Length: 423
Image (cartoon, rainbow, N blue to C red; front, side):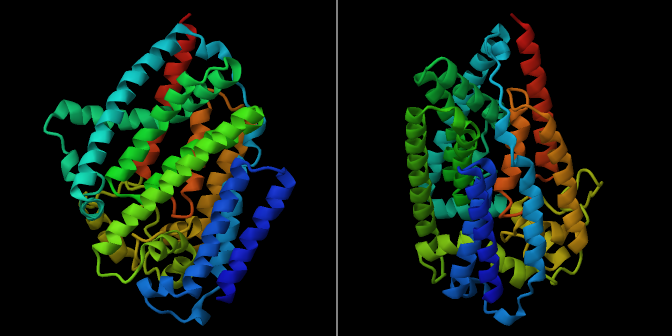
């Protein structure tokens, strides 16, 4: 318990020092704050036996401080590129006022509206079936739930395209909405754009019974607010804070409803409250008790990047089959939440995990020093922020997602550049 308490104290001090230095909440201090909260919940869930009741009892004296030192170094490196990212933002209207961008926005609007309607229908079906049943089905079939397998291949293809378009364009459309708020004093159109940029993710989170996905949908709004809040008027800041508060309330209500459904339909003795606390508090206890020095084989990139390293073994396409394979391979429970360094440690070993995180740090630290945050670079900044806000659950930019993200950013920026040339 002493190690977990000391670990939490380190993150609390880190957050306080950063906040006092910045005198406000930035993307950087927000991420540190998240990790601090997760570390505190780790202490609470072990002190109250919530974690032990689920994962079994371990000797607290068996905890080693070594993984927590490496983890702290990993977070310092990983978050560092975002330290000063909000200081250089440009809302040049060269692209926004072009005819090409207006055409892009119209096409985006109709496709996202269709995509949103599909997600609403999926959410309705999920609520009819029951969130617990949806959750169990997702762990067997992944996010491709049975009721999402549209008989019409055209609709199925449009759903895939809609998901790709939303993921690729969300930072761009939110950036444009802020431009309208700041320079044209419009409210209705920016509000519609922000809703369409975020709500499909929220509906999908409900449809697949995922508490985590709902939280990351909330982080989309946090990202754009923290990035541009220094440019907002006091009145606009108050409105945005109200929107964020309401969004957080929705996230909490959904988490409680989803968790209650799972608890009531399981043999677990957990209450809904203890389940939520354990859910967000397990990464640090997991690190010391479940993972450290328990890995029997490191995949060395085969789990993170199977497409890049030529790993062709047929391990199935469903979630349970994939998790079961890598759990057997590594000897540790891959499904559980793992803080960033621990996930990298499982993949590459003690030193290899730090080298991997350090490589990402050097690439983006150098890159972000050189760029101005504008319509062309906002997608890159957003993609990196997504990696960071997922870091208390592990490394999330796996080969398929990494490839999709890179390709979508290249295509999107090419389209934006060409649209700016169309007068």
